[in-house]
Length: 132
Image (tube, rainbow, N blue to C red; front, side, top):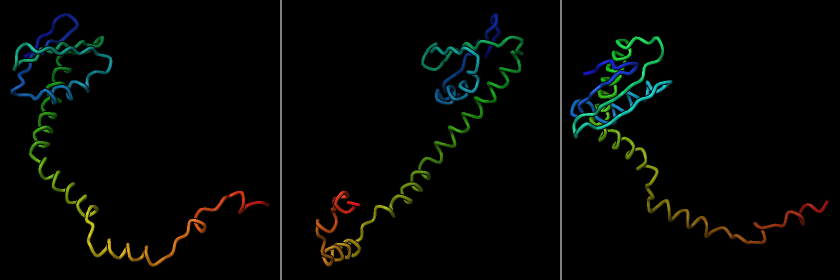
């Protein structure tokens, strides 16, 4: 439901139909050179006031807003439906980098112990080495 009031469009949306996050994302696309004010009327209704630009057709703007609201609500639904799959994919991708097999860690320790490291061989004063 919407109506034209002066140079503003008043829209009342039901949060049962459109998620608050979807509403904010949709309206963000129209923030350029506009003032957008949102207020909760009650728990399930949001009142939105959108200023029009000079010589802007209100019918075209409201059509674009409702299209964007629909698109964002679909994106939100898809995000909810694919949340578990995305978590599994990321978890599986990161799982292989976190595996520390016993044989790999032992061979690394043995390799380290086999070589003799001396602080004199590693830490050298740059000025002493490059006196020239």
